[in-house]
Image 1 (tube, rainbow, N blue to C red):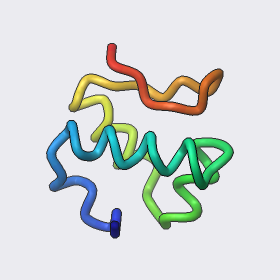
Image 2 (image 1 turned 45 degrees about the vertical axis):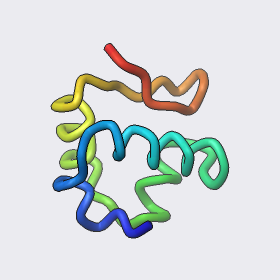
Image 3 (image 1 turned 180 degrees about the vertical axis):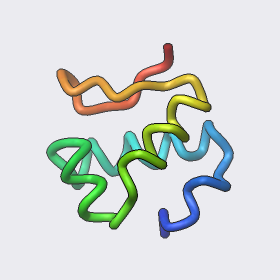
Length: 64
């Protein structure tokens, strides 16, 4: 799935896609952002809006 339009995805769908990509394809959030050519500030604002944060200890998004 293309993530170039992640700002418009439903929060639950984005949460699932990102965690899947982090688990299977990326070693860190930075790696994920580079791989999918995403703006870090915009991405972090979006996950904040959906009530999530990135947990580096488990390399996953978590609900607040």
